[in-house]
Image 1 (cartoon, rainbow, N blue to C red):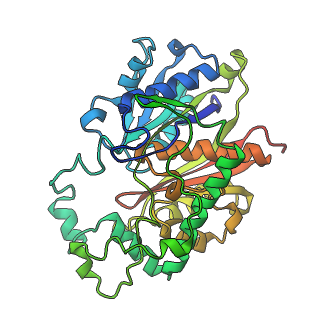
Image 2: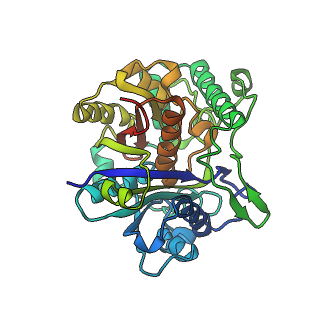
Length: 396
């Protein structure tokens, strides 16, 4: 079977996902188009040779409703012959795009494929596709009577189950900002970020990071879900999830160039990484955010590697309780868990986050000369993706 390799990985800066955010003036199609153009230019790739563009996107309505990857291909000036497809596995949509890209190369369906993700949460608000509709239906509601709950309440349930205090959550969130700020100041994000031109100028750095964030400042924020209509169902909960220890609404895009090892050699391109193994699984939809734990167990069993083989682990910071619960299960030390910060600081542009995680994880492995990294994403409905990435420049 053909071997699949990652030749390059790039992302946009992360912009606050609200009106007035750094990227809010850019149509999501044009945002992704600029990232695709930069990816191709860095490898001197002829876009006509791309077999497919797989794009994770969660909010597939409004400006993201017309197969955004196809529109981005056209906006980038690429040939009409380049197709695209949209993939939606909630927060894991971008990571699933990478899974499918690798699987397509291994199956012989693709020689060159791009795995990407895009989300403009300032222009296509989270939940706007749902509106007032019930996405669960009566049978799911009956099975999980009296019904499933929003992610914020699930995050509270996870914190409660693992005995995580408000102080632990806030300390973790402050650390995320500190690590991301340090990475920015040291220039390690420079290789992965491609500037984006907006009507107001060029954006070349993440807008979402708040240097100087402290647990003490975060302690002053109110619990975000204590007043939710469904909160009364859990009178014993000590509400501790806030805007400060949750991921940020964000605009962003990211893309990885994947191809067969043979095609990379023929083009004179040096592969940067390969995906060693991947896994996807489901878990309790009420807790919803615990899927990364069984997904990681499944992934490690499939790969033949241990958690100790992982130089770094990216557990998406949807809420601080997610990586902390995962850490309690696997015992990974603090230094290896989201070493350059995560979605609390860098933001969570839903469909793009899995690709952004892979881009940042690969950069960390290369900068530190280490071989294996693991990333995993919790997803609505109680699902999760997990994968192991190998840095091909590391000495065995």
